[in-house]
Image (cartoon, rainbow, N blue to C red; front, side, top):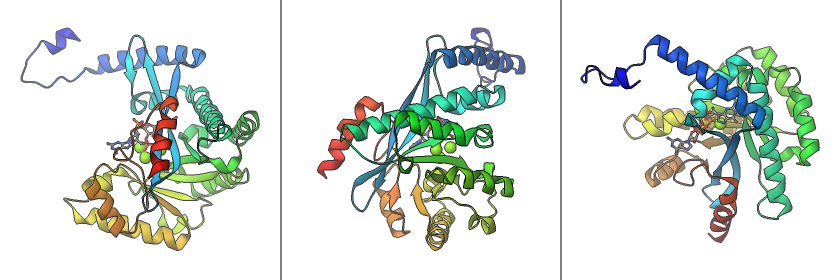
Length: 279
Ligand code: C2E
Ligand code: MG
Ligand code: MG
Ligand code: MG
């Protein structure tokens, strides 16, 4: 890499095709080892009811700190895990860890709210997913009502298949949230057919709200449609007080974002929970 960086200084560094392939293979090799050793951790980001100033849930976000590669973002390694089939092991680990941790918080009387775990497409369409979740819940002792599964709009493209898979999961008593909502090609007409519980409005709408009013209109439309369908809405990526008040005017109540809390280690959650408890 040093060689390519030292070339023409006016050209932005763009890794060659070969370098990208190399990096991918390196990540895959390390990822395989990390799966065997359970070399991942989960961070937890609070979801806030802004009217009551209470934590209403946590999203589990996976973290991978590799001794050689350093911290690798899930945005980089999850797609590789997905393509190599490593996602099954990683996904099941994340599911079990999130459930185990949440049950522990409940047993300690610290906080009793749902945790949300992200699912990738192959996990969602895995015939064994229902069984896997069922046994994770049994093993950890977490009540199904305290588990939310996050899927993205893209995973619901095969409408009939998605409805069947969702019904199967819902029968367990878990909740379903559609993540990054609004940026995919959701067949809005089908949304009412989906047995889902929450929509998470994609952060791009919040970010663009100030400069482009259309984003506020979109948020407002999603919010009113969701209300009609009896779905809860969480707005993602909330970073400023100004956004909170704009979103409040648009009818949004549940929010998640750096303003309320970064994704944190489990050990930091008691402090955060106590902070919110005092307000
Ligand atoms: P996501 O599920 O949409 O998660 C939200 C992402 O936005 C997280 O990035 C979070 O750290 C970030 N975020 C939260 N609040 C803010 C904010 O106020 N501003 C900004 N700019 N960003 C914010 P992260 O942790 O890097 O995760 C990226 C994506 O990786 C996730 O997007 C999710 O699609 C995927 N992912 C993470 N953990 C898992 C997992 O355990 N399993 C699977 N399948 N995917 C995961
Ligand atoms: Mg998510
Ligand atoms: Mg999201
Ligand atoms: Mg995302």
